[in-house]
Length: 333
Image (cartoon, rainbow, N blue to C red; front, side):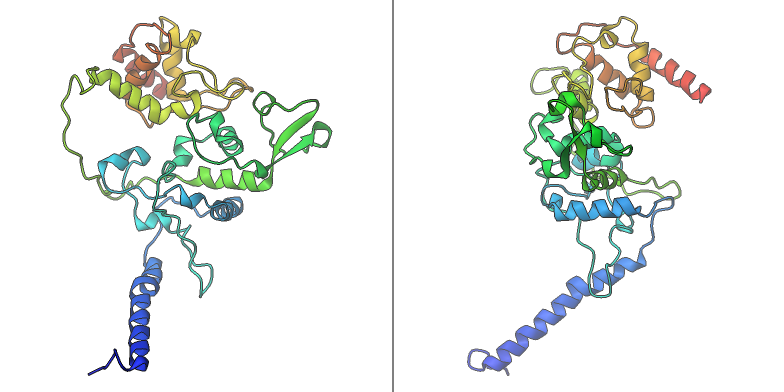
């Protein structure tokens, strides 16, 4: 029997054995078990730029505030279409060498939103660059620090053809100076845009554990659940660019408050923009298509919310109009 309270050598030896056993069970074995997983069909390896962006993501400490894990509970459904699986991290978790495992990106806190599917939610380069330069430009209540050192001020006479500049109206540069994104910023944006959940066409994806059922009709605040659903959908899909106030971001994303398109009695143009996206004016960022992400009912809820808030006063959108436009677009494509 070990006399641990008297024999310090046995105490140290026992502590060492426990440490080694735990290290093997908790760290070494799981690290090598990752090699047993395969990527999801269609999932692509990171490009050189995206890998550099991954290193910038780690070096700037983004993992301290952002997770990359969609848990299997219904409240996480806003961050992805399904819970995360080990295969989702196949390429980002490749070992650096025989001794070193790649840094963990799962995170443990959500001071900022989860980034598992941020490439799908925000496909615009301009949005990400503005967000890195000054997060408050696109998310008014953001507490994220500004990463202004990822940009440089340059005279327009020294601009290269492949340089990416930020809008002058946003940056308030004087004279001929412009704000140019450094290579680190462009790599980081490339990495963020690569964060997308790949579909599992040939397999049954894991499902979310459902929350307790909610009553339909009037909610606790006395507002109609239909309008509440529209506000929630708008917040999750549109507010990052157009702002929760509908005022947009000058020089980057157009306002919806007072918009002639939003207030038009004929909602077809608005519906087409939501379905197909928008890239017709150079002074504004590119808007993604929502045809594959939102149902007709969800598009109606968002459109009705936009047409009845921030001083807008337009009639509700008939669901039949959305269905007809979706069908006509599908036939053309």
